[in-house]
Length: 396
Ligand code: AMP
Image (cartoon, rainbow, N blue to C red; front, top):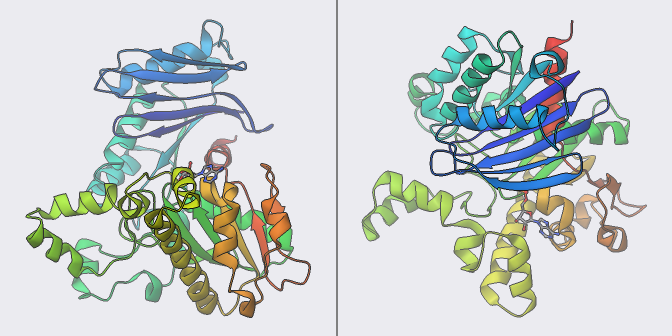
């Protein structure tokens, strides 16, 4: 089955065409600057091209991608109509409506529209992407795969904020959590490696956006992101956990509106804000190695936060069998993994420094032979989860 996977953002579109049976990606790419001017980076048949194309709206971008799949040097299929079987959409916010992926119909679209206030940047773009696919590829099944769905299993004591209960019932203010497809995939891979049904796993998804998740017996028990992806760990440009009074204080001191402060905490903070160098960890590690103290501080804050979450989640689950590292930083930055794990030997977490340094793109164990808790590096594959759920919901 060939599945077209779409991740529609406000001015961008990420896509893949995947053969579900073989996991092979036939084509992939990114349309950027939609509504501004337009550019497409497309890879197929071992050929990667970057082309400036005018994309006034998402529709022109998707039309262009579909044309590339069937025409020219990067052609990978004969016709859209016969060769694409289904479409899987990444959707950021499923609120409390969706605890699993779902086949899209009118009622699903209506629910996604109702959720726009909770994800004003993301859900409108996803709805647009869905509607365009329904128009350009009529009759094909479309599936929505949510970042939040995996976390719907959290108990109320973990998802409720300590504010008046009416804010939950009337305004749906609660922790939702994100990166659910990644946490679900990585924790399942870890459970297979542990060969234990009642496993307790902590997944550290550390990328530009980062979150930690406590997964007990395959279910999300708690996670570090909240109502929005701003809560929790320190990230590339996001502050993570913060005394909420900081908002009012900054509004007054810097003469900012509420929206401006939230934007500041989302886009100017985190690694970028503390280091003053970059949101990219590689640049910060380079500066730290040359003695830049703010770069070193940014790294220390990030590692400390991750460590605190690991300890508290082990407490919440009553123990932990495995710590998993995934995403850009988790998969590649041995320094971060070592700093996070060091000092946790009292919990039975012992990292093997040599194994940790080995670089490859495979799933691997990096704990010592005597470590009670396994430490794994597991490359995430969110597209595969989207393809798999789409397959399961649409197979005849
Ligand atoms: P992601 O959002 O999963 O693509 O991850 C992006 C983050 O991963 C950025 O902060 C990168 O600096 C970081 N990253 C990617 N490769 C490496 C590497 N080899 N060493 C350290 N950090 C890396």
